[in-house]
Image 1 (tube, rainbow, N blue to C red):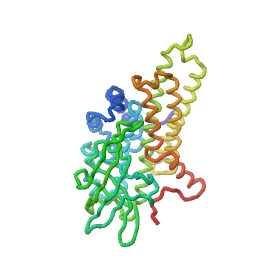
Image 2: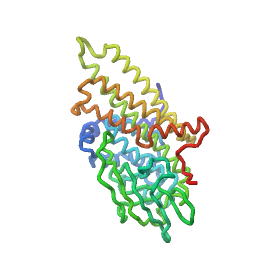
Image 3: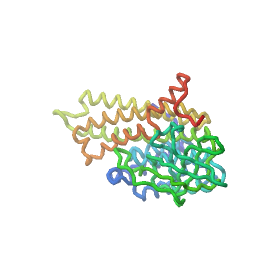
Image 4: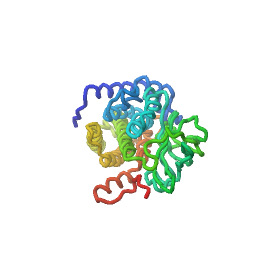
Length: 387
């Protein structure tokens, strides 16, 4: 299926493709094995201006659109879906949040440093009670004089080498309850990241629990309104989901390309493996689904870029695409037989990363819940309304 991109978007895509093939692919298995992303890759992403893709030029970014960012994430994820998932937070989710909901002062203090690759940002929202059911969250943001106090525990935080955390929780003051956000700096007293989790997939993202122990937050670090994490934050979150979709699509494409090469080169049952009808049909079916996912993703990103954001379509894309990627990577891995489950071949990490992506950035079920609320006209579990 032919998708139309601008010359500039194709330029960013090609730059990311060269970077992925020459610099990410050689260390992709190491990232999975060591559960760490080499510092040099962070530095190279800064040198290539990837961090500032979505940030406006006013704040030291490139001021490009969501489609450009997703094309970059897709290409990098072909080599390492883990790195692509980490970069999705840095390139789309966090910058979009501050760009849409942050104050002018916050943009100058935090967006500029992030766009230059000097200070990575992390998104911190998920709690043991769930990601999107905000009424059940236990993290509290309370008034303290001219500032605020933050107390709570967040899990599954994609940290990378974060210097700044965007943290969301229940806000309480004067008998009123809401949902707000604050910016926490790594140097603030009371911030305590726990050791990173040992995960099935997405192993290079440095994911872990973060404790916020009665941290004093100056008033200028409040994101948006104290009582309501405005719909702007929800909009940024939906954009983050699309960045995640691009990483998932790249995950499938990366394993698909490797599998096609493997099938073409292998002799099986006395003849070319590619001539076996089940194999050729499976590859054809997966190719068709892959093209459908690509068309769906970029139709939604281009709508956002045209000023027509549609969070329900972003949720539909996130749920359908990530479920499809997990299904297809499982079938692709099956074509490798025993070689596929051996870590030495470096292909089963795609299967594990695809499975992780079904729950990261909101599970498929919660995104279908958002879609159902539109289709059926019923309330969704996802709401910032605390009443």
